[in-house]
Amino acid sequence: LYQADRYTDYTTHQCGLTGNYLLSNERTTLTSNTIARETLYPGGNSYKTLGFYLGANHKLTENWEFNFLGGININKSDFDTQVQDFSQFPFFTSVTQERVRHTKGTPYFSVSSTRRWTKVSLTAGFSRDQSPSAYGYVLNFTRVYASAGYTFTERLTGILAGSYSSSS
Image (cartoon, rainbow, N blue to C red):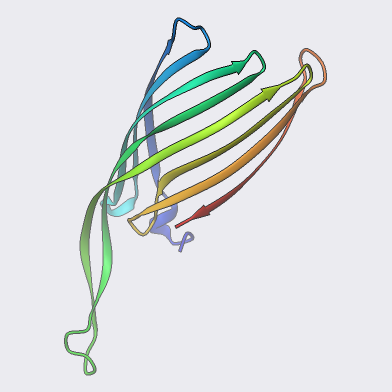
């Protein structure tokens, strides 16, 4: 499917606006984020997302922080699709081309924590998000991730990261 010409030649545009506000305790930062994303496929097919998120970053200690971000994505898809007509089955079946338009809201959720020591940092997190499909519907992604960083020198840091994702 992804080798088909109508799904490989596409363009995606995205822009966003993020606002941060440091509370008076100087340990908590409130965050708001808005994104707009458009994916255009050949033949007039398109997928658009408008996302609104709110969250916070809180420093539990000087070396340990917790992040949370949650919100909603409003997804609009507009695709041509093939539909099988079985109304005259078993004598005839036909395939017709139809325009399918969907608008759907999906949740977004992300939580992570980072712990830092003198030369080592560890981060672990969980997120649930969505992404456009070449079939014209929304794929929901669940992701668990972790990373470890090491500071070799003042100018050189190495990071080893891994994640597990599943989609539905």
